[in-house]
Amino acid sequence: MFSILKDWREQRVLDKSQFTHSDWMLAAQQIPILDRLDESELTRLFELATLFLDDKSITGAKDFSITDGVRQAIALQACLPILNLSLEWYAGWSSIIIYSGSYTSESITVDEFGIVHKSQQHRSGEAWLRGPLILSWKDAKHSGERDGHNVVIHEFVHKLDMLNGRANGFPPMQADMDPVTWTETMERGYADFQQNPKAGLDRYGATNPAEFFAVLSEVFFETPAALVDAYPEIYEIMVKFFRQNPLESKS
Ligand SMILES: [Zn+2]
Image 1 (cartoon, rainbow, N blue to C red):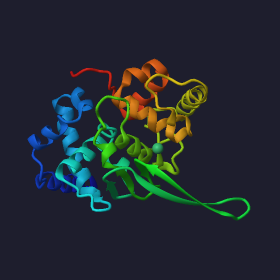
Image 2: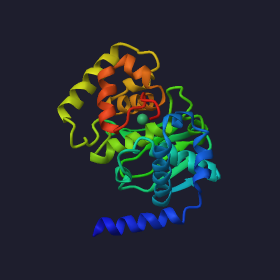
Image 3: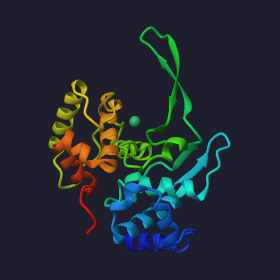
Image 4: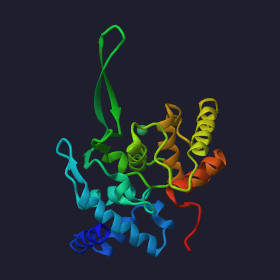
């Protein structure tokens, strides 16, 4: 009963979408990492992206104006990691805020002596637990170019990670996955990455296990061969987690 209601609601959203299949196709052609998807995968991605845009609000910060092209580029890349999962993986939050370029984020921490420290950091994106996801368009616009960097995928993978609490590199597992295998494989890789830089893997991944998962996910979707070279066993568990294999060519 509920799924029938849901399907009906989703169908209505799809029917009244402002973007046609060819609008989506044009937007997808700007994002090289989507080349590997076949016709039916693209259609599914476009539907997910349409439902995604209905579900999330995208607003510009500091006068940045959100164009259709921005909305489409964000939605397509946000939905790539969940292409074979579902939109429910992005449940529990709704706001995406976009700055034109990198922005300054102020954080306030209190140390053990009760002294308040204020620090400023330049950021290209961040994801808040149960809160907004923030991106710099200047960085997001160069995502998807197969250079191993993708701030959109990075931040949305933090959201997947946060589905079961704070980002810690341990997202909810698929039913057929063994959580122990995931933890041991990621811990082994993370410990190794602390000591040994790997070609094509950003050192930012050595910051903590959550960043390791997010950085390796960027590589998984952007330059999968680099991940297979560095950590074949992590590539394998990511194929199981994301339910897709970016190294497979079009069927
Ligand atoms: Zn991060």
